[in-house]
Image (cartoon, rainbow, N blue to C red):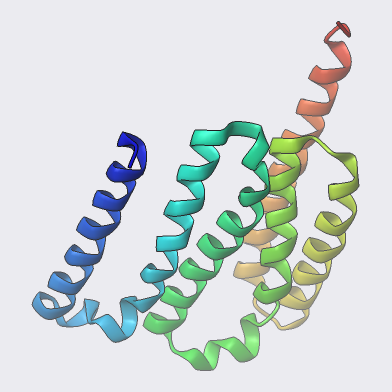
Amino acid sequence: MEKFPKIILAVILIAAGVVLILSKSIPELRISKMWPLFMMIPVAAMAASWAREGKKAAGVVYPITLLTLLCVYFIWLNFNGWKQVQYTWPVFILAPGLSFFSLFAVLKEKGLLVPACILSGLGIFFLTGAGSFAIAAGISLTVAGIWIIVRSLKSEKEKTPAK
């Protein structure tokens, strides 16, 4: 086994151990609330693959982003109550949209912007319609920031002379 995958495995084992210890030591962090962190195990493996193989493995950016966003969302639900899903269910539409944005940021393929914008737009629309203004505003600002980054990358690429 190469050194890098061994380190990733070690970090995963340490993180899993810490989560289990904290779940027994701090009642608020019991495993029934922290289980989404275990979704980060495949994320770590995919990130290691991406780091090792570079752009050849860039396709893992989509599931890395998706699983990370859902992990955060599920932990939030665990602490705030799963009844919140009745208002925040559009996150399930928004998360793939943001994942397409992250994949676009890496691959710079314009075709990825179509599903990114459609899914993100729908997610924001339905979140706004659900009356969750703070969530919708936060997501809107996030998407606006991503859009600015995408446009900046595009304009820099156009300025760079072709080789």
